[in-house]
Structure formats: structure tokens, C-alpha cells
Length: 264
Image (cartoon, rainbow, N blue to C red; front, side, top):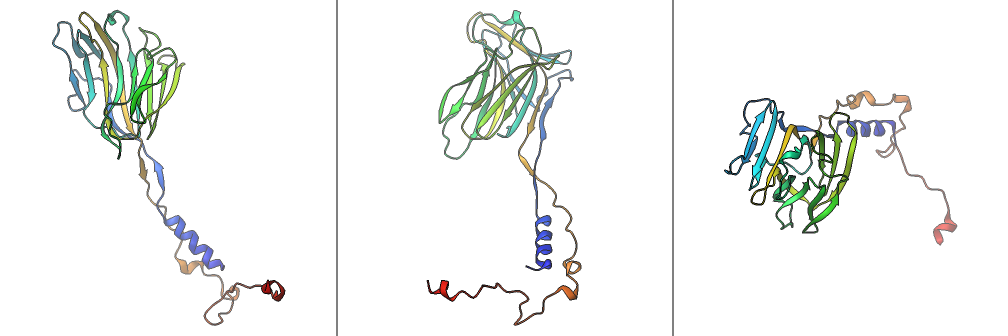
């Protein structure tokens, strides 16, 4: 092939589009405002005495008596996302009943998926549930639970991909790794993040505190193509380097003369 051919091919490759990983914050809340942002969250708190969801000193505090309280993203979250939040479990608010959890509840399933429920679901005991092969079940157990200890702040990161989720829990003050767990799940199109104070029985009391919640959309974005190298005419080789054109061609595929091999 001629020098011109290779240079032209290089120009074509460099001018094409390139894909790069994008991260766009679609939900962010450090609870610095005096009230819960109704544009970001849907809150459901039981009317039983003592139940509430409020912001105190820049921290969201949810407490439920007798029945569960929910704190849910209004925006639908795409499957390729990263969820980060600071989590605190007060020991004096755990009494009877069930327990707190955070989940990614499916809103739209992928083609062929008929199930409904949580793509991933983490209980404070450390049990991780999710849908896999169309069946909801226990998928993994985070070492030490979520959070591993009460009355201590933890930084939680949940990285959700097309068919798997990785949960990483660290101590907020020291950055020490507490647990790293992964679990498989079925494909999904979109869902909502749901924090739950699970008081599921008469006389039970459950609560949690949240800070610095952020959800990033990690779907790939199309980058700007680079500038082409140069006009093709400037890549033409000097006239003395160009083979003569014969019958309109300047190159041939040559084969050795091998009559004996050809007969076989």
C-alpha cells in the first residue's frame, strides 16, 4: 500500500467519535437547608406519636414508631449509578420490630424481565437481597452488617452496574474499610433509591441519620471527536516517490511463478 493510503486511514480513525466514561450528579443533598427538599425526595412517615423525618444541624433524622417510614428519591435512577451516603445508626432507637434498610427498587424492567421489587436491598444486619434469575433471595452478607457498629458514622458506596452491585462500607472518620461485598442481579432499566426505617410491629421503634447523599449517573457519554490531522492533499508523497500508473493502477499483488504447485 502507498504512503498516502496509510495516512488517509489514520485521518479517518482520528476523526471518528470516541466514548468515555461520564459521571453526572443527578441527586445531591447535604441537608444544609432547614427543610427536606420536596423536589428530590418523597417522604412517608407514620402518624403514630414520636414518628418524624426532619433536618437537625445539617443531618437528616428519621424515626418511626409502630410502622415504617420511607425516604425515597423522586427521580428515577438509571442502572449504571454510584450511590454515596453517610449513615448513622443510633442504638437507643432500635427497639423491637424489624430493621432499617436501603434499596434500589425497580421502576422499569429490562426487556423480558417480569419481576417487581428491589434490585439490591441491604439490611442493617448485613444481609443483602436481590432479584437474580427472576427470583428474590439472599445474595450475600456484608461482614459486620450495615453499619458494623451503632453510634458511629460510616461512609457507604454502592456501585450498581448492569447485572451486579458492589457495596463498600468505611468508617467515616478514619476511612478504615469495614466491608466490601458484591452480589449479582437481573437487568433493570431504572429504579428509585429508598431508605427505610423499618418499624414493622406494635411498640417497635427504628431510626437512622443520613448526611451527604449523592447519586451519580455513570452511563457512558459520547466525547467530542479530535481535530483531523490535515487535508489529504498535504499528505501526498513527493512525485519522485510515486510509482508510475499502468492501466490506471500504481500497485499490484505479485505471485511467484510456481507451475508445479498450481497443478496440485
